[in-house]
Structures are given as C-alpha cells and as structure tokens.
Image (cartoon, rainbow, N blue to C red; front, side):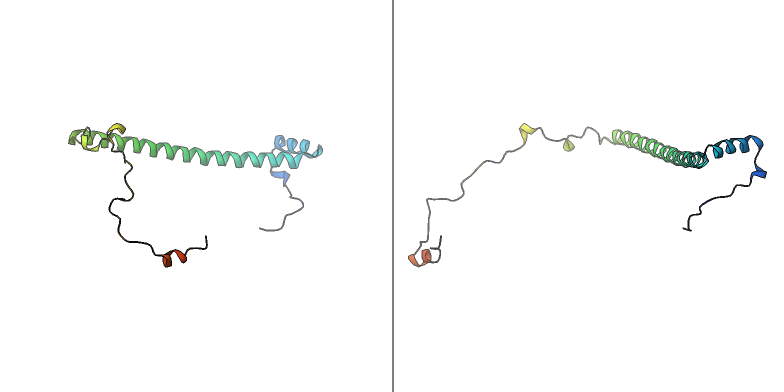
Length: 125
C-alpha cells in the first residue's frame, strides 16, 4: 500500500452545478471528509450486502437441490421396500440386555500360597 496523501484534488470542472454546490456546502462546513467517508462506507456495505445476497441465493438453491434429492431417495426407498424393514429399527430400551455384576474370583478353588519372603518385598507401606 502506498503512503497516505494529506489531501486529494477533485476536478470540479467535470461536476454538475448541483453536485458542485453540494460539495461546496460540505467543504465550507468542514464536513466534506466525513461526508465522503460515509458515502464510501455505504458503497462498501452495499457491495457486501450484494455478495451476501448472492451467497444466500446459492445456499437456497443448494438447499432446494438437497431437498429434491432427499425426496427422490425416500421414493426409491419406498418402492424397493427398504422403508419399514424391521431389521433396521432400534430396539426398545426395555429389550436391551443389561450387564449384571458377576464374581470377580471363584473363592472355592484357591491354589498357591504366599511365603514370608513374598511379603518382605512389599513391607514398606
């Protein structure tokens, strides 16, 4: 980006009298810079709004396309008998098997033993 200029020059001989008088009024009241800035910001906002409108239109078209594709898929599923097939239904929560607690160890058939030597290794706690 180039350096900012302190001032811009406007060639007034190409402006209509109506436009020149309006600019002169703002210049005399020392509000010409603010006025020009507001016009440029409005133009930028309008351009942004135009882009957003284009994006909104594209999004709407895509949504319509997806909606039409979904309708075709639903129709195809109904003609092939895919819809209503019980094998794809979720089971009701009451029919789902619940895990039950069980024994961690069978205490009736214990084998092996502990010697005093085994216990000495862990006597620090």
